[in-house]
Image (cartoon, rainbow, N blue to C red):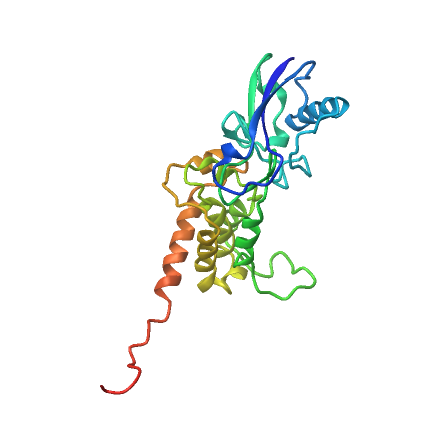
Length: 265
């Protein structure tokens, strides 16, 4: 099959939110594409041809190529990870496209994910959010027996559903406000349903939301684009979990002191 690729090319890191001034779309024609190729294998073929011509290959992130690490995400025809639901870019195959298709490939578009080069974005903002509270305080060592800490099956299922988040950023890319609430909600929901995660319960949601706002992510408008784009199909109920935990932490805050400071004057 033959495809026409329109790929965002950008040689330097974004310095502003006006993406149009930092790079441009470049058109490439690619023949003899196998329908059994993965999307990234197709980009590999393109890069081999560009390298032979003495041109700069297209920079894109990837690692496991098994839908586990979350590093491969790009916008394909305006959809995070492409047209196939519940699939990362590396799991997408060219049989999902018609012969002669024109495919538009862009990086995530969010101020909190500055473009480094071409299709590569800096997702360190997610790491900083996680560092603010998506962890538990337990002693490490030998693994406990599976039944040492009883966890009800419904709670375990909810925690596992949230824990499948791979931090790819598709939820942010899909949201018109570049909100990270599905990502943050997944981190909160993962821990709140497990007894091990309740040590930092009073601070976790509050700290994560504060870090999310500091990084410049937008607010949620409950239109569910994030759930539709998530390759792990994490449900939006995790956002409700986060909202409840955030409200709980604010209610349990110590009230401001009413003591007067200074003299009676």
